[in-house]
Length: 263
Ligand code: KIV
Ligand code: NA
Image 1 (cartoon, rainbow, N blue to C red):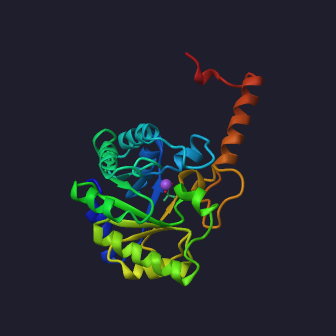
Image 2: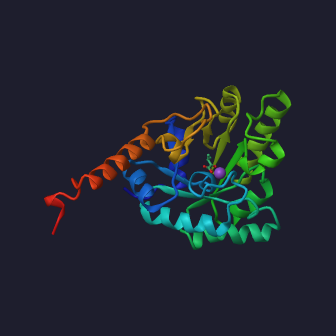
Image 3: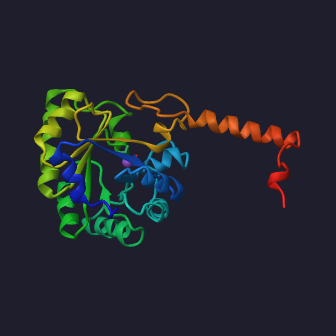
């Protein structure tokens, strides 16, 4: 039951074993997912949308990310915890980006950070500083204002070729794995085949080495229209509504608390 390291993540690919990552944003969720044996927990900046109620990930701050990463670290004793660097925290000078990445490890106890886009030089610099880096290509939600919405990326051959080249460059810079978001399945397969490091897909088809889902999505806690790649493994939102209604009804009828709940 020793803690998961980046070498264990590489070993999944080397053995041809597929693996799962989930997002987590708090202590209790991290404890539960750790208990379930999930090897990789991402404190995603999706936090902004699913936990904080922002309409994109662009607003999320370093302080918010650190606050939640600390909570996840307290809950996860075994899983490898990855902190998602928020928009703006690695878009100024490289020195500032290093300082921010260091905060995830030093203050919040993360084991690695994730960066969106082909940030090749910065990845090399962080890896040299001893900070494991997870890359993220394809749909990179922090660039939503530039992409013009949440759309599948890499459909054109030129874009697909650029993505493969970017993936290889991130690998050469020392990234330990790569998230591929919302790309055609054949491109997910192509990148996975081209790389020695593991790929982790979200809407990137069945051939990536790993798969990641957002906590609130896979548990059925989210409401409204969901992306095609989401599979709900349970429907907790409905369960919670039913439980909250049952509690209210029992309070109203004085059935709760019963004798067994009283001192
Ligand atoms: O923020 C997030 O949850 C992510 C994953 C979807 C990869 O970046
Ligand atoms: Na993210």
